[in-house]
Image 1: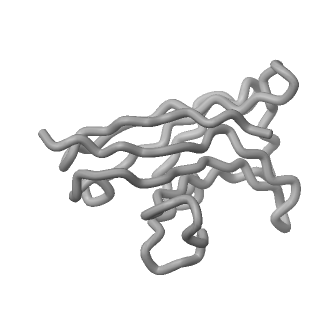
Image 2: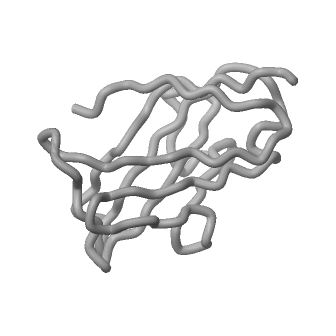
Length: 115
């Protein structure tokens, strides 16, 4: 199970979030078929495909895969995602062709702090 990592971002700011995929304490290699997704949701129990969920992807260029061999990425979170201060939920997944395998790098509460 992926550990829970709280994340704090500033309201109305473009933010970069470093993502590190690992498995068994070792870097998780992102093969060329894998894409990366970063979800921001009102709460943990809201579905990923809910209209209130924001989804960023490496396909759309919102997530930069820095080094596939060590599973390092940067999610570029736009200011529109942090427009409202409060508590949210996030998770970041690497997804293989056809949806498998799916590996979660991080998940947890997302606190957007008023500036």
